[in-house]
Every structure is written in structure tokens, then in C-alpha cells.
Image (cartoon, rainbow, N blue to C red; front, side, top):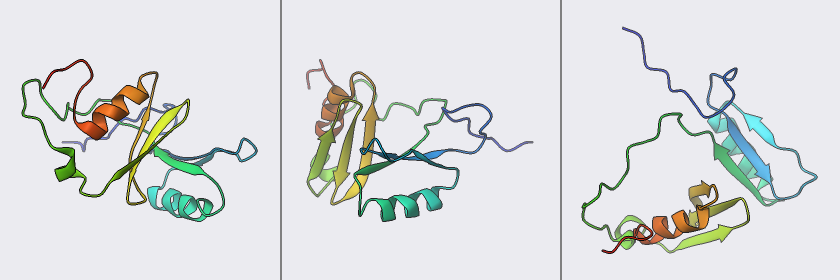
Length: 127
């Protein structure tokens, strides 16, 4: 029996998961890593001088929905006891708790999904 190998949302010629450090400064180049620890160390250092984001490619297969339809509502204060900070730009919304990255949401609806993430209420759904 062979071990399961995760397939990532990235070019097929890159079998290892890729990590990216993206800078707000257009003169800084994108940094790409296939080692998470190395990417985190680079981001920690770069973050002192630039506004930058550490991102990792997502699994090709979506994760199961964290909340099934009809499941009881979860109080975000129980999950995130410290206040969440939400920063957004035209490409993404970044959510942090006490300076630690909690989520990075992208896509056309990233604003709505960030609101749902922080409040626990899905758009268009009555609790």
C-alpha cells in the first residue's frame, strides 16, 4: 500500500508544497520556498522592514466544510479569545489574532468570506 501524497494548487512540476512571501512594495520580488520553516524564517526577518505576507498553496481537494447546514452556531469568542485584526486590500483579506496569522482569504468574495469567518455567520443565512 502506498502513502497518500497530497496534491497542491500549484504547477504540476512542483510536487512539494510551495510557500510564498508576497510584498506590498512592487520593487520587491516574490520569494518562493518549498520548505515551510525556511519560508517562515524569511517572512519573520522581512516583516521587520516591509509589509509582506506568507502564503502556502492549498490542497487540490477541498477540505470538508467546517460547518454543516443545520449545525449549531459557534461563538467566535470561544474560538478566538483575543480580538481579531482584519486587514484587506483589493486582492485579499488577512485576519490575525495577537499578531499571529489566522487566515488569508482571496477571490472575488474575500470580503464576504472574511466577515463570515470572523462572525461565524454565513452570508444570506438566518441563525
